[in-house]
Image (cartoon, rainbow, N blue to C red):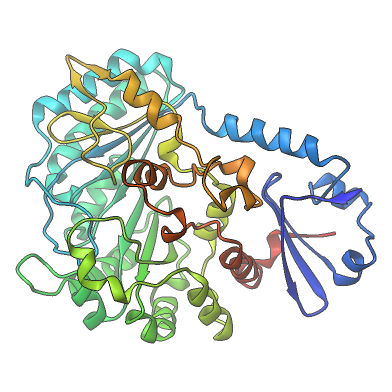
Length: 427
C-alpha cells in the first residue's frame, strides 16, 4: 500500500493531520505510523488516505473532476444592479448605473417557467454592483420564481452578496421570505481601515451602518435558517490590526452559529482603482493563518472546510449563467464584458462557440500547474477567470494567486483542526 498522492499533511507535535482531496476526509494519526510506513490498515484504506495504485487514483480523480462539472440544477447569478453606492478601492467593476429592467426580469421568470422541468432545483445568486439597490425587484422576482418551483415540486435556494449598507432588519426579514438564506458581507477591519477601503461614493464611511445592521440582525431576528459570511479582505496595511479585529469579531458574532467568517487577501481582478493600492497587496493567505494560529484565534472554519471540498469554481459548471440588468448573458460576473449571449422571449440565446471556449479552458499547458497535487481534480478550474485572463492577455499564472497553494493549505488544515477537531478521524 502507498500513501495517496492526494493527501495534504501537517505535523503538529507527535501527530500528523491529513486531508485527502479525493475522498474529502480529514484524519489524524501518529507521526510514527507515517515514519514506519504503518499505513496498510483498514482506516487508511477506507477513508482514501492510502491506495494500491496511483494510476487508478488519477483515473478516479479525473472521473470526479468531470462529475463536478455537470449538474442537473439550474444556477443563475442575477446582477440585480450594475450600480453601486460604494467606491471600493479594489473594485474591478466600472458600473453602467442601471438596475435590472422589468422586461429582463420577466424574461428570466419566463425562462425558468418554460424550462423548470429540465432541472432538479433552481439556485439563484443575487449580485451586482450592489443588488439591494434593486431590492423591490429582487422581492418580486423571488416570489414569482418560488411559485414556479413550488408548482413544479422543485426546490429553490438563493444567496446574496451585498455590501450590507442597505441590509436593515426590515429588509432582511423580507429577503428571508424570499428563501434568501445565505449572505456574504464584507468588513475590512476596524472603522478607519474599512472606510478607507470601502467608502460611500460621496466619500463618507460605511462601517458603522454595516456593523449596526449586523448587530440588529443578530439580536432581533430569531430565525435559525440563515447564514451570514462576514468576509475580511486583507492588505499589508490592514494586516497590522487583523488579530485585534478577529478578536472583536469573535466577541461580537463568534458565539452565534449563524455567523461564519472568511479571510483572504485582496486580489487584483483588474480595473483602474486597484493600481492605486498595488504595492499594498499581499502575495498569499499564508500570513493570515500564521497570525490566527500564533494568537490562537479560532473562529468557525465552515468556509475553509467548504473550500477544501470545492475544488472547482461554480462558474465552471454547466447550466450556469449570469444575467446582466440589460439582458446580456455572461458566465462569470468578474468578466462582465464577455457577453456570450442574451435573453429573448424567455429563451437564453447563446453563442455556442464562446460557450465552448469557456468550458474548454484548462491549465494543462501552464507551467507549474501540473505539479500541484490537485491537478487532475482541478485542471485550473478553481478559477476559469484566471485562465481566461492568461489566454486573453498572456499573463503569467504565477502572478495570479491560487487558493490551492500548498503552503496556504497546510496552515489552513491546522487551523481547521484547532477550530473543529471533531471532524478528524483517528487513523
